[in-house]
Amino acid sequence: MTLTGLYIYPIKSLGGISLPEARVEARGLQHDRRWLLVDKTGQFLTQRTDATLALLAVALTPAGLTVTHRTRPELGTLLVPYAAPETAPVLVRIWDDTVPALPVGAAFDAWFSAAINRPARLVYMPDTTHRSVDPAYAPAEAIVSFADAYPFLIIGEAALAGLNARLLERHQPPVPMDRFRPNFVFSGGAEAHEEDGWADFQIGAIAFRGVKPCARCVVTTIDQATGQPSGKEPLRTLARYRAAGAKVLFGQNVIGCGEGIVRIGDPITPRS
Image (cartoon, rainbow, N blue to C red; front, side):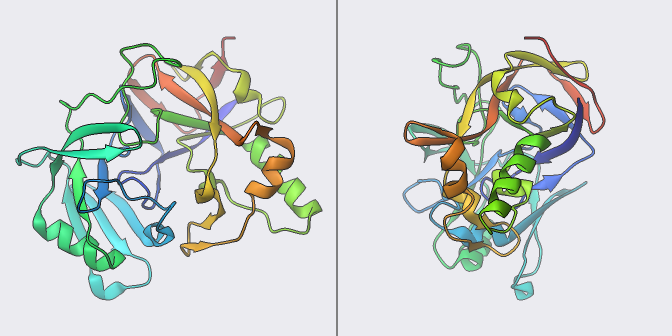
Protein backbone atom coordinates (compact mmCIF):
# COMPACT_ATOMS: atom_id res chain seq x y z
CA MET A 1 0.00 0.00 0.00
CA THR A 2 1.13 3.53 -0.78
CA LEU A 3 0.46 7.01 0.59
CA THR A 4 -1.22 8.91 -2.25
CA GLY A 5 -2.70 11.93 -0.46
CA LEU A 6 -1.38 14.18 2.32
CA TYR A 7 -3.47 17.09 3.62
CA ILE A 8 -3.53 19.71 6.33
CA TYR A 9 -6.19 22.23 7.38
CA PRO A 10 -4.25 24.95 9.19
CA ILE A 11 -7.31 26.96 10.25
CA LYS A 12 -10.00 24.58 11.42
CA SER A 13 -13.00 24.27 9.03
CA LEU A 14 -11.37 26.41 6.33
CA GLY A 15 -9.92 25.11 3.08
CA GLY A 16 -7.40 22.28 3.08
CA ILE A 17 -3.92 22.11 1.55
CA SER A 18 -2.47 19.18 -0.40
CA LEU A 19 1.23 18.61 0.33
CA PRO A 20 4.01 16.43 -1.12
CA GLU A 21 5.45 15.90 2.36
CA ALA A 22 4.71 16.92 5.94
CA ARG A 23 6.23 16.73 9.39
CA VAL A 24 4.51 14.46 11.89
CA GLU A 25 4.32 16.08 15.33
CA ALA A 26 2.74 15.00 18.60
CA ARG A 27 -0.55 16.83 18.08
CA GLY A 28 -0.84 16.25 14.32
CA LEU A 29 0.87 17.24 11.09
CA GLN A 30 2.84 20.47 11.30
CA HIS A 31 0.49 23.50 11.09
CA ASP A 32 -2.60 21.29 10.98
CA ARG A 33 -5.50 22.97 12.82
CA ARG A 34 -3.24 25.10 14.99
CA TRP A 35 -5.46 28.12 14.25
CA LEU A 36 -9.15 28.44 15.05
CA LEU A 37 -11.97 30.91 14.50
CA VAL A 38 -14.15 31.54 17.54
CA ASP A 39 -17.17 33.73 18.20
CA LYS A 40 -17.30 36.54 20.76
CA THR A 41 -17.95 34.02 23.55
CA GLY A 42 -14.92 31.87 22.62
CA GLN A 43 -16.99 29.08 21.04
CA PHE A 44 -15.34 27.49 18.00
CA LEU A 45 -16.81 28.10 14.53
CA THR A 46 -17.27 25.27 12.07
CA GLN A 47 -18.78 24.38 8.71
CA ARG A 48 -21.43 22.47 10.64
CA THR A 49 -23.13 25.82 11.32
CA ASP A 50 -21.57 27.99 8.60
CA ALA A 51 -20.86 26.16 5.34
CA THR A 52 -19.36 29.31 3.78
CA LEU A 53 -16.18 28.76 5.80
CA ALA A 54 -15.24 26.38 2.98
CA LEU A 55 -14.90 29.41 0.71
CA LEU A 56 -11.84 30.62 2.64
CA ALA A 57 -8.80 29.15 0.89
CA VAL A 58 -5.54 28.74 2.81
CA ALA A 59 -2.02 28.34 1.42
CA LEU A 60 1.47 27.95 2.91
CA THR A 61 4.16 30.50 2.06
CA PRO A 62 7.62 31.09 3.55
CA ALA A 63 6.24 34.08 5.48
CA GLY A 64 3.11 32.41 6.84
CA LEU A 65 -0.38 31.31 5.90
CA THR A 66 -2.24 33.24 3.24
CA VAL A 67 -6.03 33.32 3.29
CA THR A 68 -8.27 34.43 0.42
CA HIS A 69 -12.01 34.32 -0.22
CA ARG A 70 -12.92 32.29 -3.30
CA THR A 71 -15.78 34.58 -4.36
CA ARG A 72 -14.89 37.96 -2.80
CA PRO A 73 -11.58 39.12 -4.29
CA GLU A 74 -12.15 42.62 -2.91
CA LEU A 75 -11.13 41.29 0.52
CA GLY A 76 -7.59 40.78 -0.74
CA THR A 77 -5.08 38.34 0.74
CA LEU A 78 -4.53 38.00 4.47
CA LEU A 79 -1.08 36.91 5.70
CA VAL A 80 -1.05 35.07 9.03
CA PRO A 81 2.49 34.69 10.46
CA TYR A 82 3.60 31.26 11.66
CA ALA A 83 5.14 32.68 14.83
CA ALA A 84 3.02 32.42 17.97
CA PRO A 85 1.45 35.80 18.77
CA GLU A 86 2.90 37.67 21.74
CA THR A 87 -0.48 38.15 23.38
CA ALA A 88 -2.16 37.11 26.61
CA PRO A 89 -4.02 33.80 26.33
CA VAL A 90 -7.79 33.54 26.30
CA LEU A 91 -9.95 30.50 26.93
CA VAL A 92 -11.72 28.97 23.93
CA ARG A 93 -14.18 26.10 23.73
CA ILE A 94 -14.01 23.24 21.25
CA TRP A 95 -16.51 20.48 21.87
CA ASP A 96 -16.16 19.50 25.55
CA ASP A 97 -12.71 21.05 25.93
CA THR A 98 -11.85 24.52 27.20
CA VAL A 99 -8.24 25.38 26.44
CA PRO A 100 -6.00 28.48 26.38
CA ALA A 101 -5.22 30.00 23.00
CA LEU A 102 -3.45 33.15 21.81
CA PRO A 103 -5.41 35.89 19.98
CA VAL A 104 -3.68 36.63 16.70
CA GLY A 105 -4.75 40.28 16.57
CA ALA A 106 -7.56 42.74 15.95
CA ALA A 107 -6.70 43.27 12.27
CA PHE A 108 -7.07 39.53 11.63
CA ASP A 109 -10.37 39.46 13.53
CA ALA A 110 -11.68 42.31 11.38
CA TRP A 111 -10.73 40.53 8.14
CA PHE A 112 -12.43 37.28 9.11
CA SER A 113 -15.49 39.07 10.49
CA ALA A 114 -15.92 40.80 7.13
CA ALA A 115 -15.30 37.55 5.24
CA ILE A 116 -17.98 35.53 7.07
CA ASN A 117 -20.37 38.41 7.88
CA ARG A 118 -20.35 37.80 11.63
CA PRO A 119 -18.04 38.65 14.54
CA ALA A 120 -15.08 36.27 14.61
CA ARG A 121 -11.74 36.04 16.36
CA LEU A 122 -8.66 34.18 15.12
CA VAL A 123 -6.68 32.33 17.79
CA TYR A 124 -3.60 30.12 17.79
CA MET A 125 -2.79 27.02 19.85
CA PRO A 126 0.71 27.47 21.33
CA ASP A 127 2.99 24.59 22.26
CA THR A 128 2.16 25.21 25.92
CA THR A 129 -1.49 24.27 25.45
CA HIS A 130 -2.15 20.64 26.30
CA ARG A 131 -5.41 19.29 24.85
CA SER A 132 -5.70 15.60 25.60
CA VAL A 133 -7.10 12.92 23.35
CA ASP A 134 -9.93 10.90 24.90
CA PRO A 135 -8.08 8.51 27.25
CA ALA A 136 -10.68 5.82 26.58
CA TYR A 137 -9.11 5.40 23.14
CA ALA A 138 -5.54 6.65 23.43
CA PRO A 139 -2.62 6.77 25.85
CA ALA A 140 -2.89 9.43 28.55
CA GLU A 141 -0.02 11.44 27.05
CA ALA A 142 -1.63 11.76 23.58
CA ILE A 143 -2.48 15.33 22.62
CA VAL A 144 -4.34 16.94 19.74
CA SER A 145 -4.61 20.33 18.04
CA PHE A 146 -7.96 22.00 17.30
CA ALA A 147 -8.95 18.92 15.26
CA ASP A 148 -12.26 17.47 16.42
CA ALA A 149 -10.79 14.72 18.58
CA TYR A 150 -7.72 12.94 17.14
CA PRO A 151 -4.42 14.06 15.57
CA PHE A 152 -4.80 12.22 12.24
CA LEU A 153 -7.43 10.69 9.95
CA ILE A 154 -6.65 8.06 7.30
CA ILE A 155 -8.93 6.86 4.47
CA GLY A 156 -8.30 4.33 1.71
CA GLU A 157 -9.12 5.16 -1.90
CA ALA A 158 -11.06 1.89 -2.00
CA ALA A 159 -13.45 3.19 0.66
CA LEU A 160 -14.31 6.24 -1.45
CA ALA A 161 -14.62 4.14 -4.61
CA GLY A 162 -17.08 1.85 -2.84
CA LEU A 163 -19.16 4.79 -1.64
CA ASN A 164 -19.21 6.40 -5.08
CA ALA A 165 -20.29 3.13 -6.71
CA ARG A 166 -23.25 3.03 -4.35
CA LEU A 167 -24.07 6.67 -5.01
CA LEU A 168 -24.13 6.03 -8.75
CA GLU A 169 -26.43 3.04 -8.21
CA ARG A 170 -28.79 5.44 -6.47
CA HIS A 171 -28.46 7.97 -9.32
CA GLN A 172 -26.54 10.36 -7.09
CA PRO A 173 -23.35 12.17 -8.13
CA PRO A 174 -20.04 10.87 -6.77
CA VAL A 175 -18.23 12.88 -4.12
CA PRO A 176 -14.52 13.76 -3.89
CA MET A 177 -12.27 12.82 -1.00
CA ASP A 178 -12.19 16.41 0.29
CA ARG A 179 -15.71 15.95 1.70
CA PHE A 180 -14.09 13.80 4.42
CA ARG A 181 -11.09 16.06 5.19
CA PRO A 182 -8.48 13.30 5.72
CA ASN A 183 -4.83 13.79 6.55
CA PHE A 184 -3.68 10.55 4.88
CA VAL A 185 -5.09 8.82 1.79
CA PHE A 186 -3.71 5.52 0.52
CA SER A 187 -4.07 3.17 -2.43
CA GLY A 188 -3.47 -0.53 -2.87
CA GLY A 189 -5.51 -1.96 -0.04
CA ALA A 190 -7.03 -5.39 -0.35
CA GLU A 191 -10.55 -4.22 0.43
CA ALA A 192 -12.57 -1.12 1.23
CA HIS A 193 -12.40 0.10 4.84
CA GLU A 194 -9.60 -2.24 5.82
CA GLU A 195 -8.09 0.70 7.72
CA ASP A 196 -10.88 0.23 10.28
CA GLY A 197 -9.10 -2.87 11.54
CA TRP A 198 -5.60 -1.44 11.78
CA ALA A 199 -4.05 -1.18 15.22
CA ASP A 200 -0.34 -0.46 14.68
CA PHE A 201 0.95 0.57 11.26
CA GLN A 202 3.72 2.58 9.64
CA ILE A 203 3.85 5.25 6.96
CA GLY A 204 7.42 5.15 5.75
CA ALA A 205 9.49 4.96 8.94
CA ILE A 206 6.91 6.64 11.20
CA ALA A 207 4.70 4.54 13.48
CA PHE A 208 0.99 5.22 14.01
CA ARG A 209 -1.88 3.59 15.84
CA GLY A 210 -5.50 3.38 14.71
CA VAL A 211 -7.87 4.08 17.59
CA LYS A 212 -11.45 4.09 16.28
CA PRO A 213 -13.44 4.64 13.07
CA CYS A 214 -14.50 8.22 12.46
CA ALA A 215 -18.16 9.19 12.95
CA ARG A 216 -19.20 11.53 10.15
CA CYS A 217 -21.32 14.68 10.25
CA VAL A 218 -23.07 17.20 8.01
CA VAL A 219 -19.73 18.59 6.75
CA THR A 220 -19.59 15.64 4.35
CA THR A 221 -22.65 17.10 2.58
CA ILE A 222 -20.94 20.45 1.88
CA ASP A 223 -19.28 21.07 -1.48
CA GLN A 224 -15.80 22.23 -0.45
CA ALA A 225 -15.33 24.19 -3.68
CA THR A 226 -18.55 26.21 -3.48
CA GLY A 227 -19.47 26.19 0.20
CA GLN A 228 -22.93 24.93 -0.74
CA PRO A 229 -24.74 22.08 1.03
CA SER A 230 -25.65 19.28 -1.38
CA GLY A 231 -28.59 17.77 0.47
CA LYS A 232 -28.43 14.55 2.47
CA GLU A 233 -25.74 12.78 0.45
CA PRO A 234 -23.38 11.09 1.00
CA LEU A 235 -24.59 10.53 4.58
CA ARG A 236 -27.84 8.93 3.45
CA THR A 237 -26.05 6.33 1.34
CA LEU A 238 -23.35 5.74 3.95
CA ALA A 239 -26.03 5.08 6.55
CA ARG A 240 -27.25 2.12 4.49
CA TYR A 241 -24.01 0.17 4.98
CA ARG A 242 -21.76 2.05 7.41
CA ALA A 243 -24.08 2.71 10.36
CA ALA A 244 -23.08 1.81 13.91
CA GLY A 245 -25.98 2.67 16.14
CA ALA A 246 -26.77 6.35 15.56
CA LYS A 247 -23.37 7.03 13.95
CA VAL A 248 -22.18 6.75 10.36
CA LEU A 249 -18.53 5.71 10.04
CA PHE A 250 -15.98 6.52 7.34
CA GLY A 251 -12.21 6.61 7.84
CA GLN A 252 -10.02 5.72 10.80
CA ASN A 253 -8.91 8.08 13.57
CA VAL A 254 -5.20 7.78 14.32
CA ILE A 255 -2.59 8.86 16.84
CA GLY A 256 1.13 9.10 16.16
CA CYS A 257 3.80 7.05 17.89
CA GLY A 258 6.79 9.06 16.72
CA GLU A 259 7.85 12.17 14.82
CA GLY A 260 9.45 12.73 11.45
CA ILE A 261 8.66 13.32 7.78
CA VAL A 262 6.09 11.46 5.70
CA ARG A 263 5.95 11.80 1.92
CA ILE A 264 3.65 10.96 -0.95
CA GLY A 265 4.78 7.58 -2.23
CA ASP A 266 5.77 6.25 1.20
CA PRO A 267 4.80 2.61 1.79
CA ILE A 268 2.08 1.91 4.37
CA THR A 269 2.61 -1.23 6.39
CA PRO A 270 -0.03 -2.48 8.85
CA ARG A 271 1.50 -4.46 11.69
CA SER A 272 -1.74 -5.91 13.10
